[in-house]
Image 1: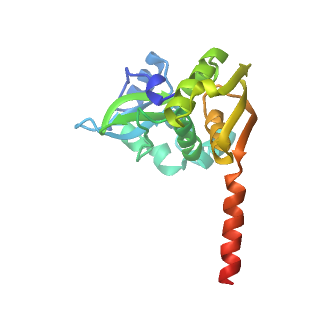
Image 2: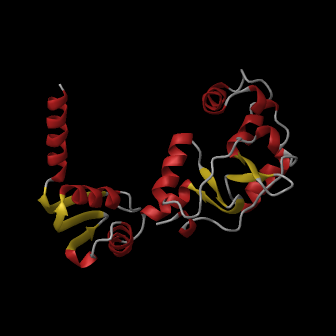
Length: 230
């Protein structure tokens, strides 16, 4: 599954000059938790979110606000956030972005690695959508039939060039059982790896057999080569 299949295409944006009061009103009006900040040329220069608004609730002093202040301090920093008046002052910049053709797994990894809840989606530098953590969670709720179809068509046929009819697939409650015989161990491990990346897959039970253990042969060959050099 690709980002373009999940992203929201009707994106609410603000400029760096938009006040945080206006940002708060837009977030509430559209029931969203964050939005891209775009400059006069339409380039995405940052992202502003509910967390940035919460800094204003600290009442001015970074040291005040008790537990909320300490939590936000660890996550976002202090002085600039508290003093921010506009979206440009408060935004996270540079923005972490993703391409529409990126996989859902790639988007999830970017969100986790950068501790962000949403990613502007850019195509040739142009904003075409936005994808949030809630969108990725929604993808995980897909039916077993949808999961099986993606494994057959996207993973086996289009990614690994394997005839889906040569592999036995069963999906129950997001648990995938894959069986059959493939040429080598590398292929068996690749199938299991890519199946695990499919949104909605809870776990993989591989019963794949292989005719050649090419990984063991490579290890043995490497060891033999090293021995000869020594």
